[in-house]
Length: 254
Image 1: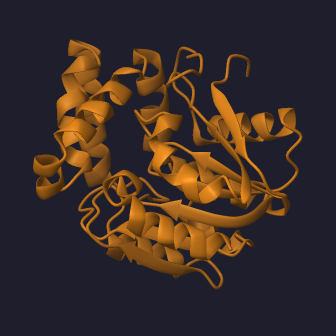
Image 2 (image 1 turned 180 degrees about the horizontal axis):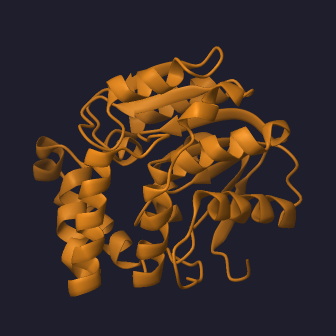
């Protein structure tokens, strides 16, 4: 796909690729760069219709988003990389590791799922209807509120402002496209095929996106995988508790 917003940073022999989620852009990883850049080459990019990546009309699929990632890696001549993804990015990372086992050095799916289920799908259908009727602005506030715990939101209004701005950089087509892909998520049966060393990371206070118990269950399906929970963090764990998240990230990638 042409028109992909991405950045390559850092120094080191090993690659790490950071995969964003719904209504995120590559700026969500700013708090991780200080620990990654000295030791790794880091690729981070925007999903279709998000941040600096061109939108295409119609529904997207997990398959398409995996192909986008594979195409970007090919274009950058990256044969093998560790993958870290959050939310939908974690789902894409798992799906990529299933389809391209030889290309994944280490896998760290964060605050995510591998399977869409009816009660969760109902919430997403409602969000899509709201955006269809009232535009993307109508879900900016509920989305920002859902991603973080109450005490964090009260203590860090400036972070919430940055997050709202990030959500607003998502196009209508991009939001509708990736949410359609998310609604079609069905990777759980194939998790035992993952070969890379895998660490599932949840936010201890994430009630909805990738709750700790759910992610521990995913880890149990992947050979030799582990699960850890970042304290004082809800859904966007790497933004809410960057210090706690980075400690886990550094230890795992090392």
